[in-house]
View 1 (cartoon, rainbow, N blue to C red):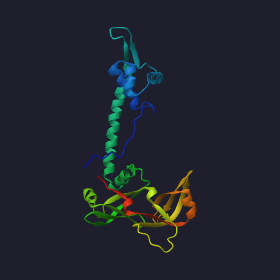
View 2 (cartoon, helix red, strand yellow):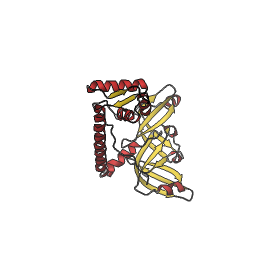
View 3 (cartoon, helix red, strand yellow):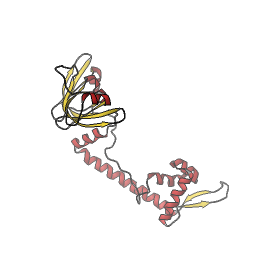
View 4 (cartoon, one colour):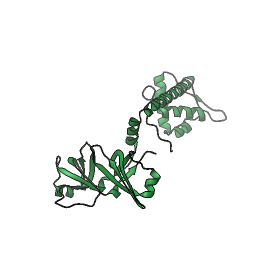
Length: 264
């Protein structure tokens, strides 16, 4: 199983402004004996490094650097005892900070439902529509497999994937999964006019928002239970459908447009 990223994180700062990058600069000065080389190592410009070190020294009321001039090496910079004390304090606090985060991560792992919710939220994808729920049905064939995912409110999303992909994912009934659908793959229907469509997914709801830009609009359709499906339409389509907030409509999309994700 692949290593999962931590659910908890936090940046340690001293005095609200001295962060890991600042202490990387101090350590680089100690390692190289040169402000210019230390600045390049820590990702600062030479001027930026000097300004930061001078500001910190002024606030500390003690120099952080001592300059050595001349000599065979042409001089350089060294950390003062004050700077070494800052580095030592940072190392102790960093270790305590990481210990705290690991302890809290362990406590969080004792609540699988909450941990699962956080991991689903943490997933980054360009698909605007992301819905989580248990797998309610699996219909496997020799080539393709149809999987139904239950949504909050009782409706289901049907996904069509290859049977080899379904086997590799180890899909099981009751397993938590995420359905991903691009907004551009969703067709809004205001009135079926007596026709039936072949698309497996036809979710009835109410238009809850219409966000327009210069050429297109994103329409949000709220389903029973509060789940919102987003559809990307042209402004002409919005006008042709006469869409308005509060109007009933259906989100229609093919099962092949649904991508499934399950925990690793």
